[in-house]
Amino acid sequence: MMTNLDCLIAELCPDGVEYRELCNCLIRTKGTKITAEQMQQLNKENAPVKIFAGGKTVAYFDYDDLPEDDIQTNPSVIVKSRGLVEFEYYDKPFSHKNEFWAYHSQNEYIDIKYVFYYLRNQESYFRNVAKSMGSLPQISIPVTEKFKIPLPPLPIQQEIVRILDKFTALEAELEAELEARKKQYECYRDLLLNFDGQRDVAVQCMTLGEIGRVSMCKRIMKAETTPDGDVPFFKIGTFGREPDAYISQEKYDEYRKVYSFPKKGDILISAAGTIGRTVIYDGEPAYYQDSNIVWIDNDENKVLNKYLYYCYSMKPWMVSNGGTIARLYNDNINKTKITLPPLPIQQEIVSILDRFDTLVNDITQGLPAEIAARRKQYEYYRNKLLTFKEKVS
Image: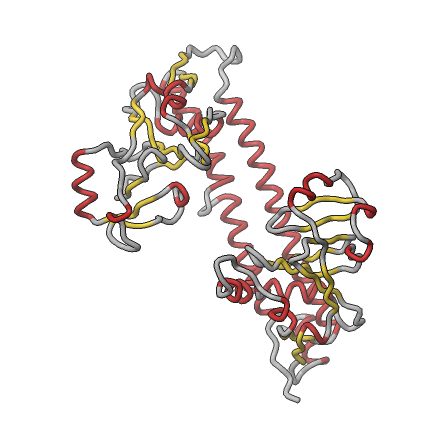
């Protein structure tokens, strides 16, 4: 059964479509010369002109804050050309840092949002080009100017935009629901872990130092690691993600016999950089950077590890600055107090919060899994919709 888009293609461009360089079909505009400090100083809530910088950094200015020629009012595709290279569509007054540029169309046969979707679908190509340009990923103006895009007849462009807008809206709805559920989860978690006269439960207040000793793996020297190997080694920057390096099985076995090592279920805590990030140790062979990744040597006679995990997630960690990097010292950890109900109540709280946590964080089920599935579906159809046979002249 043919879709409306199939019918349009069969009717309007059965022999393929023309591919044109961006410089020959769109108008490129410049940004404004502005620093991050100026963006922060001049930012005004609800001002009409949006200024784009790298990533999600934005600010809002009045018209008088910028040179008139630097403010764009046409619906445009913004090319974020440095760092994480990406494209953004915007249809209200805007500007951006002057190392970026933007495109709009004054051709009645080109839908600029269609161009945005096509370029967004090619972001991996542009990011690969950016990686080859030096230590800071970036692309130059000729990279986009000479890039060719397919230009089917306008009704086809508009139908593609309609379909992809619908996918985008659905994804946004799911993400908004996930964000709402996360806030609900945090509120409920804080309520469950608050025993200040709200429930008739016998509790005791203990410091983490009273529960167990702060432990860490022995220091691993750089010469003892390899880019690949037997046992993954996690530094603070890769904690909870992909390993930074590897150590040999022999070194792992040697150190495990003599030095501190987490037990399955222990809660590992980041003590530098992003303070208080937590990971539940799964018991699989792994090694962790000393003093930057620590845990409480807890036997679970007083507190369940998973209960500790949820307490950590809401604890405002006391941070001292050890030089240029924020650090959580053992003394801060030892003095941190938590409220301990009896073990059966801890288990009941953990069971409730586990269900919430699965709903908002588990990528194999719940809302994150649904969003991931929708994204795959969206990417599949976007690729399919934006692939055209090139017309032979």
